[in-house]
Image (cartoon, rainbow, N blue to C red; front, side, top):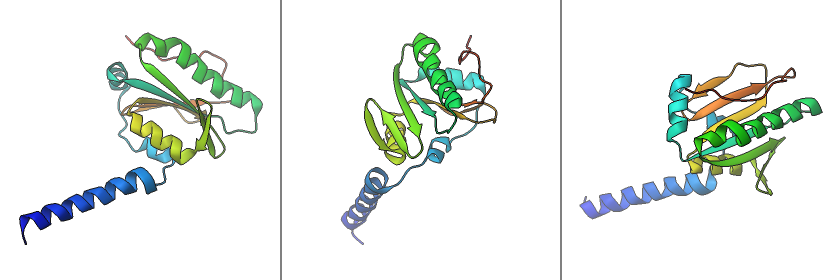
Length: 156
């Protein structure tokens, strides 16, 4: 087979994969967590190196107190400690099957795709009794019904 045919076929395959990834693939919240768990210190290092920060708060709950607590944590992070890193901050709110950002109302798939394309460090906040975890470029922040303190991150 001629080298031109091999190159043409390879370019076609790469193009099809790109079209699938950008235009066809459906994303979910789970796609945000497809990353390696890392130490808190490594997360803080990645935060200092990042171009931007994406804060995603999932306030899907029938309990207004929990909704308020999750949104308050996102507010605390965006207006205090995150500003000390001098980064662009993008805020996304998720409720049920919709995502809200800068006055836009989109699907969760479109929202996750946008966040992944920004290549930012992600703070994901939701109502949960799980423990906080740090991943490669992602901090998972669970907020329970007993949340009563300011949401913050510490660094040295």
